[in-house]
View 1 (cartoon, rainbow, N blue to C red):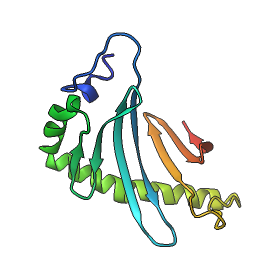
View 2 (cartoon, rainbow, N blue to C red):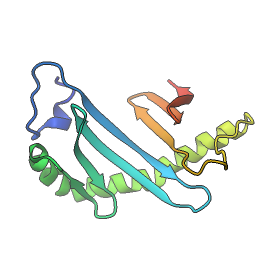
View 3 (cartoon, rainbow, N blue to C red):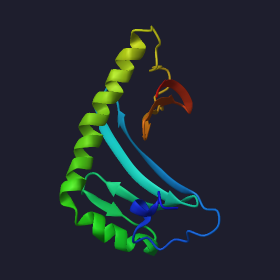
Length: 141
């Protein structure tokens, strides 16, 4: 549980027994409209714990257990601005690079027949993944 401490510091959760701590972040880019979105959210035992609102650069904590962390993270304006830039610029650049890489292999990832396509760029420590509908399309270790 020492790996979780930087993330749950100030969050009132039980660290005894078996629990699931979830962290999901990434970006979405619509190549037709140019709309860009990013997300950074944490969960605990299957429930939303805290998430970043990129429009207001503030954290949303639906559970009282995360209020202390929300206030702490809200006060770090520089880090929140960094996250906004990461999710709206750098993450999108990486996503476009992966798409360009896949195009060189003649693989069409964007099927126009279905407008509900979700591409995710996930990074977990040194593992980089490009997922499409839950299927791993590219893995770089």
